[in-house]
Length: 232
Image 1 (cartoon, helix red, strand yellow):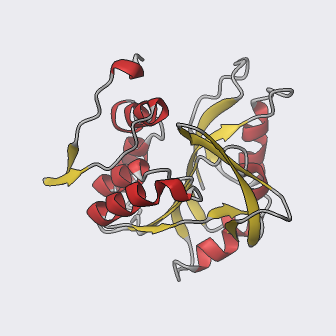
Image 2 (tube, one colour):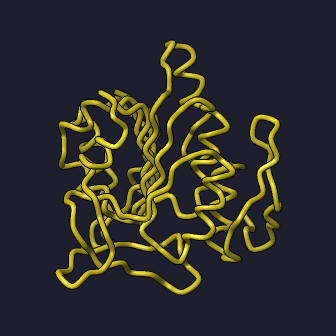
């Protein structure tokens, strides 16, 4: 897709309401907009149809790695009555995400989500906010909360949708099996080590957690990332 030639609209409509978009002028954000609103990378349309067919009410949504909140806006268009919590650790995006969260009526938290609560190091590439990642570092200054604490903020006994795009942190998050027993849908972009491009890893993890895989995984792909959708 020629994202460099894509002109992102200044506003979109969500259930008849005009929403002004607040986004940085970055190539990666253009790609993200195309993936979410044009390509439906996270297969949110499938989730909406499947939930309607099975009479599943979508009330709680956790968006990990929200960037400027585009996925949360799309989620809001599909699930108008749901509670959406969007997490993004990059404070350089605070103004964009806060404005989009107000327009989309979802909550935003400027924290990373991982396997523990504490502080981590945030790696940011200039003009590439969508590639921000975290790593363990005792001198880190970026706040992180555990997946358990993120779950507890909903004050509910289950999570309907967990969306993840957290540049490799997903593998540690998956270690908390008890939380994922309470999750109905997972939609995500997963990331692999460049020295180990085994796409079966995500299949094995989701199967181990008891999820049914919906996506077709390209096992021979030489890319160090992929997308996956599964339900419990």
